[in-house]
Amino acid sequence: MRHVAIIGAGQAGSSLAAKLRELDFDGRVTLIGDEPHPPYQRPPLSKAYLTGKLAADRLALRGPSFYAERGIDLRLATTVTRIVPAENRIEFGSESLAYDDLVLATGATPISLPVEVGGALANIFTLRTIGDVEEIAPHVGPGKRALIVGGGYIGLEVAAALNQTGVDVTLVELQERILGRVAAAETSAYFRSLHAERGVRLLEGVGLVSLEGEDRVLRARLSDGSCVDVDFVIVGIGVRPSVTLAEAAGLAVENGICVDLQGRTSGTGIWAAGDCASLLWSGRRLRIESVPHAIDQAETVAANILGANRDYRPRPWFWSDQFDVKLQIAGLNSGYDRTVERKGARPGSCSYWYFAGEKLLAVDAINDARAYMTAKRLIDAGRSPSPRDVADGALA
Image (cartoon, rainbow, N blue to C red; front, side):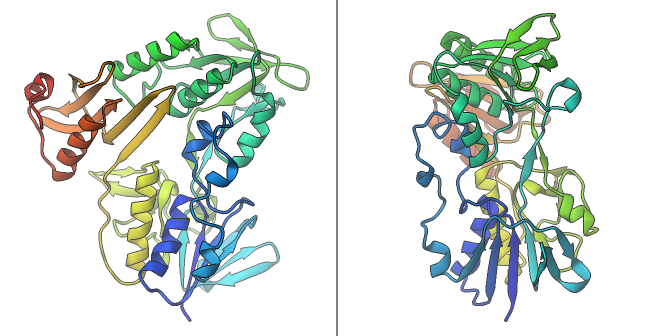
């Protein structure tokens, strides 16, 4: 009986296992996760789950009986230690498991602070898993003082969530502006004002020099010469694709596990999907860290394991919730040379449209679902409105 083994029980791995059964695959499916929790949603971790507004059982991607009912062997709290491609097997502890097809859906790992700046002190956290939030939760509450390191989306989401629980939040961003690596100056300015109005202290162009304390962190020394007293620190300076197993198995790795457009790695019978996988797109190796991408790519890989031979076409879209503001992003803005602002129909809503010449690349829609849907439809179709029509509001 043909056996598909999946390493990684996150959004991509869970979606792939479910899709195999949906496509009537009648062989064995094994889904292996290193956490003790059944597959769950990660986006709410930095928002509703962190603030206690969402219970743990609401995070689950599927009901408790889903996997057993579909004959999916879900193995939790299991860490795969080695892939042996020549023998088509994987190892974990003293056990090994043979496979016919292997899928790597190993995700990504948050970047931690180095020990030399005080990163080994207690009460310094990253936020990626349920376990991370459970460690942070006892420190959250009115009057507590938090330092957020990193002004990307995860840092800003955490800052907003903590602020709403009464935590005194300071956020430092080494670059000259928040969201500097992922968004235009206009989007940065919008969220800078939003956070400042709600009482988050944003320090842009300011780096972390060191964290100090005897056993746990007590203060942060910053590059502008100031010191901030803190009770805990959350680090949001990015993630790295989890490629250790792939590298040790001799698979090609470049900004993630290299896959072709159908999801195949350089190893025979080995596939990859989700945050850990990089595909060649428009001449460069691209990783897309988003839930829709993880689902779509994983489902394409499932179909290709069963012989569909279908290329995956990424349709990037993302979102971020901060306070009462929803940012929806369609497309990838890499290579833009100008942005055009479009006012929304509701007060406070707007969108920023990214162009390279006359070509529409991406849109940031802020509390403006209509602009987002319009832009998404245009980008999916490969159509570009004129920048003048965008600015004038002359779009359906």
